Image (tube, rainbow, N blue to C red):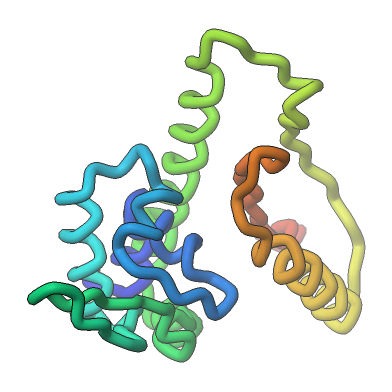
Amino acid sequence: MNSKAKLILHPVRMKIVQTLIGKKEYNVQQIASKLTDVPQATLYRHLNKLLEAGVLKVVRENQIRGTIEKFYSLNESAVSLTDDFRKLSRDEHLNLFLTFMTHLLGQYENYLQQDEVDLLKDGVGYREAIVYLSDKEFLEFTEQLSELMKKVIKNEPSSERTARHIANVFIPETSKNN
């Protein structure tokens, strides 16, 4: 499988993409300051992979003492995975989902490895709910959820803010005929 989805679902590349969501434009140092757990050489390697795939674009360059400082942003049209998803086999979808879930599991494990953990104070939660929605209601729900995410995703880091990983998974109930 050689899809854009697989490229983006790599843990480091996913962090880079998440950092640039919301039409943000950052140079390498700004991205590195937000991804403190990613070594700079690794960051450069993954930035280049995303550039080569057209997921990122250089939006401007500044000449600074003989070097060129590049500012990156998401190539919003290239990040759409709809066409990629339609072309994938069932096994490839399962593999991507496993990659996604493994990434979440790694984030949760990292959280639990800290010296001080207070799940309630830190707002840790995972829940599942079965909801009954028409196609129209489901579309409205996902649009509303997307709007809420767009509001908070623009927040910049500060001493009052904690980075929180939020993931959505939507899986329809299997039909009773299966």
